[in-house]
Image (cartoon, rainbow, N blue to C red; front, side, top):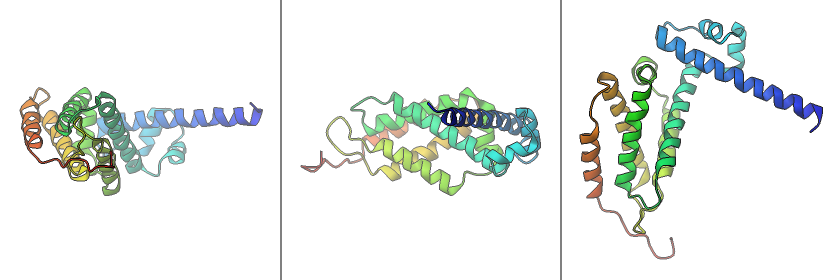
Length: 201
């Protein structure tokens, strides 16, 4: 490795580390002060960087909030994909998503309150990108060689229910979401799934 590449690599690592510190600080400040009262200066101070350093990584506090929301969504999606088993039916995938979502929100109630109630609503572009990622995870065929229900409408259902499960958990961390999951699973199990046409497997 040439010295120039080594310096670039160290610089990139330093940049990622600073950005991660700023995100941790932003989460702490948002949770402590609320979205409206939080300032980028406080975030920089909590991350132990100069105030101007914040703006090298984020446009403003909304950008930091949106990044926190995006990372939370990607973390949850990754957990769901890792827990899926080959051959799971669509209803089973959706039930798994809702169980993992409830666990995810319960794991950090301060973050749940912030993302679900304390900050600006999710931007439409970011939300729709997340819905598309959920749809991709739902597109795999079920264990009987059939295509799942239309993925995008199902993805919208999963995303919407995931937010509502979060609100339920924030209001009552001990809330039992199993009845909701059973209801959704039963409903999806009775919907028609078209067989895969020959030559498309």
